[in-house]
Length: 218
Picture: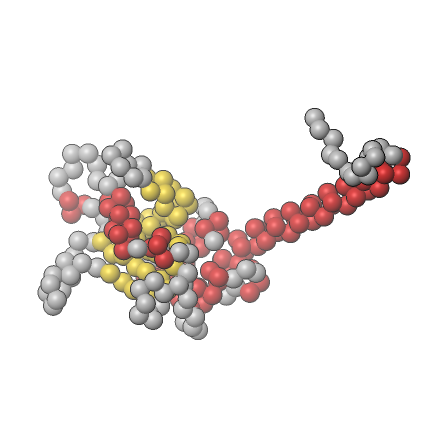
């Protein structure tokens, strides 16, 4: 599904608007499959890395397996995202922009039946938000509903672009569909050519005593 978002700001913006429930969110930059290297340990490759007009950073991960969306991985991605956001020697940590790590999972990995789970640090049980600007969201990919997030999850699971709700996803989704159809068409053409070649060789005796078609070797 991430191929749909490659260099696609409108699609990224729409997804973030729906997931964060911020209709005015405006994406200024994005890149797909962005690697952030860690010279002292494990690096990460983020499915979608985006920045909005307010300077906030968003890491969107699309995960099919539960083990790929464990809480510790979300924590690690959040830390790696932070590691590049302040210049060397910067002492004012309030300049650190807000960050969002968003896991869109195939199933409800949290298991509470909600469409979206939002996690932010709290001060004890009732002390309110800690306010460090870090937010982790889990999107339940199994959720279906007539609301925007339900339709979005429907589109994420769609195999045909014509069945999607959101045109901005459907239009890009048609590209791999056309590529698959072209690949199948080319495959059929090659098989027809091989059959004709096979028949021509057997009639002329070129296939040898075994009577089987063998491809010419370089």
